[in-house]
Image 1: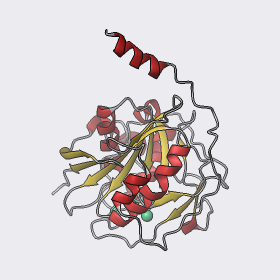
Image 2 (image 1 turned 45 degrees about the horizontal axis):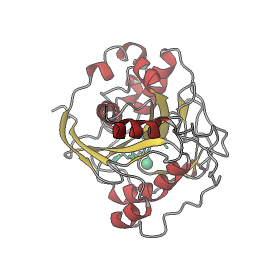
Image 3 (image 1 turned 90 degrees about the vertical axis):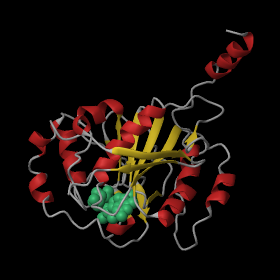
Image 4 (image 1 turned 120 degrees about the vertical axis):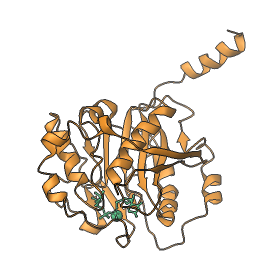
Length: 287
Ligand code: UD2
Ligand code: MN
């Protein structure tokens, strides 16, 4: 290779590892949704180091973790703006090598949050060798940056204390909202189920998958794992799934053949915006 090229690669290699505890963390973050969310242009200007599909790498050190933040999405543009407004600065302070993926379900058919997670996992890995995957509702904003989005040894439930639930864990096995798993952990669970159409159950099914794969979940202390949820109504197309109670009793058997190993969808577009990658998909809603 030319000397110019090797100089370049040297530059990359000599970056020291980022410290175990990022130095610029603030702790509590003042989050509110009383204001009008900023325009995209404004947020792009505020986050100049985020580029190419919402990807950031700390410039001064080698990040300890390569993280894809996967967001199931349809028609929540106001929530997306609040999310980007607060989460980009937080994740940069956490010194992660991260990117944000919006997995946008096309059409008006039944919403499938869990299948969108699987699609985000597969599509993000086509772009970069992510090691850690944060599965994140678009309407949840972290209120303490000490809750690091870097995968620990056990799958982690991050949204333990949500304002909507009075900052109390609703039940011990809750695994909705925001969760994170390494590539190995997610594969071991065969990802999420693809068969939960409409609201509910897919999060409990994922808890079961983790458990039946021989893993335990972990959480940060309740003072740190705090989120505000942007208030919203239940959308048409996301009505509660009446089959959910029966389905979550079957996880031990269904997880073998329903998940990453049975995922099918149609990729309609993949666009790299400055602050996020937008992946629009046909999730093949059953007739
Ligand atoms: C709870 C869970 C959520 C999920 C859901 C049941 C927590 C804190 N949240 O949230 O993780 O398990 O129950 O499915 O435990 N979405 C759209 N457009 C839509 C519908 C949904 O973008 O039309 C996305 C969006 O990212 C949203 C997420 O799906 O945040 C979950 O839907 P929700 O916010 O309506 O459900 P919620 O608040 O009851
Ligand atoms: Mn919600």
